[in-house]
Length: 261
Image (cartoon, rainbow, N blue to C red; front, side, top):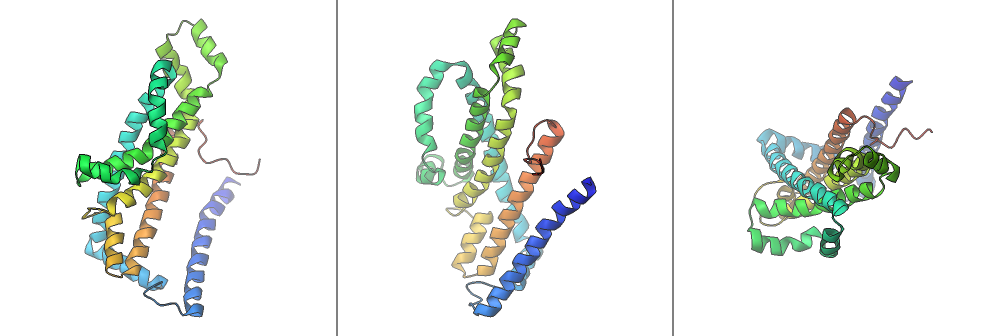
C-alpha cells in the first residue's frame, strides 16, 4: 500500500504536467496566437537548452539562490529572537508591536526606493527586500505558536523548578515548532516572490534580471523559461525544507496528511 501511494504521488504531477503541455500546444494550434506572444513548448524548451548550454541559466540561478538564502537566514535570525522576547517581555512588546504591525502592512517592494537610498543598488538592497518579505511569516508563525502553548505544560515546568528561560526554550518553543515551520514555509515562498521584484531594478544578474532583459528583447520564450525555473526552484526548495524538517523533527507534520482520515 505505501508503494502504491508513493507511485500515485509521483505519477499525478507528471500526468498533470503532460496534460498542461498538451493543452498549451493544442491551444496554440487552434487559436493561431502569435508565437511572439505565446511560443510553443518546443520553442521554450529550445530557449532553455540554449541558456543551459551557454551557462547563463546556471549563473542567474546561482546569484538568485544565494540572495534568497542570505535574506531568508537573516529573517529567521531576526524573527525568532524578537518573537521570544515578545513572549517574555510584555513592555517591549507594547512598545515594538505597533511599528512592526505598521511595517507589516507595507509591501516590501514599496520600500525599494528607500532601501536603494539607504543601502545603495548593490546586494544589500536586494537582500534587504527579501529579508523584509520573509520576516513577518516567521515572526507571526512563531508568536502564534508561543501563544497556543498549553498552559498546563508551563505549570509543570514551574513546579519542576525551571527558570523562565528554560521554560521558554524547553517547553514553549518546542510546542510552537509546528506553527514556526508553517511560517518558515510561507516565508520561503514569499522570498522567491520578493527576489524577482528586487532583481527587476538595478540588477545585472539573477532570474528577475533575466526575465526583465528578455522582455526588453521581446524574447517571450526566455521569459517563460524564467517563470518555469522560478516555479521549479520554489517547489524544490519547499520539498527540501519539508524533508529536512521530517528528518530533524519527525513529529512535526508538514505535509498535511494523506487526506484519507
